[in-house]
Length: 210
Image (cartoon, rainbow, N blue to C red):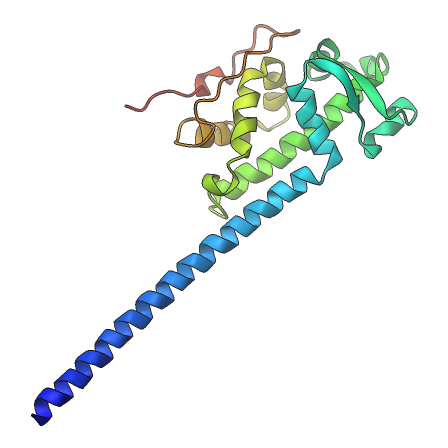
């Protein structure tokens, strides 16, 4: 009986150790997931709290109308609070072959270029974070909207390539458009305003892996 009791006690001890290990592993994984989500949320907060990034997003979303200018961009237009959003000016502003002399033709040109540069820089940071597995695409699903939107913005593609954002933006599009995500199959009408020849980023359109 003594041996049986000792065996039982040992078995209980082993079982308790396994349970404790499983609980510790579960809590560890839960903590990792929580930290990933928290970091992803901080990236989205940076976007939502930046008037310049929100403005850039509206430039992409809207085809016209008045847009409220962020404080940081108002000096370009003598501190005016709004501009008339013009897609033709927007397209010209994003042309890689824009000449310095053309910057003075319309103050909106520098506004568009500055805000889009900030916007693409932020998206590149997100792309890099996902690539380094600091968090998963599932932790920051809203970025999938911008991946889909950028594909439709033909006039933006040359700017992306010319100023070194090509690799990171392509990676971001592959992540959200070729893999299962909330925005995988979202389709926006293609915007052809001034540039109608560039198709550089179109091969990354969503497709079926079946």
